[in-house]
Image 1 (cartoon, helix red, strand yellow):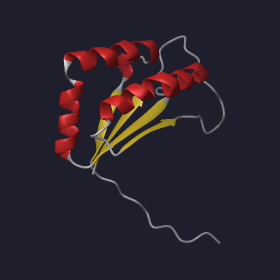
Image 2 (cartoon, rainbow, N blue to C red; image 1 turned 90 degrees about the vertical axis):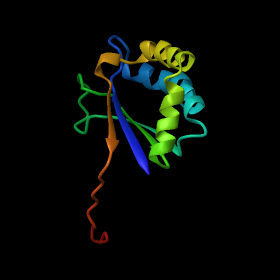
Image 3 (cartoon, helix red, strand yellow; image 1 turned 45 degrees about the vertical axis):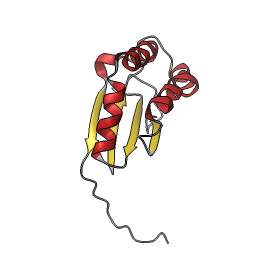
Image 4 (tube, helix red, strand yellow; image 1 turned 180 degrees about the vertical axis):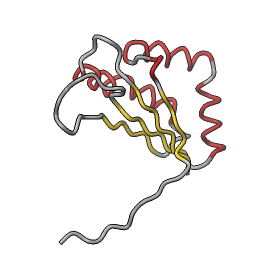
Length: 119
């Protein structure tokens, strides 16, 4: 399993509520269209400050895309790199994200602690 995690920041001047509403109503559909047939999961995790204080953050959402293997990941990104597909994605991203701050990572190691049962 290959998991791609991308951290995304909303564009300046966009409220958090408007950001989430637009992403879920429009941008995620582009993702679903492009990832269909390649990805096994496409998840958005909106970041909320643990202390409840709404202040400027480095990122607003963690996006995860899961692929069954490297070959499928590579085939998907070859499709995304096609000019018509890339133009569609970039045009919509410019309405939503601060594209200069996008950061992507391949999750290569995952370590999980075994926790005792809750009492």
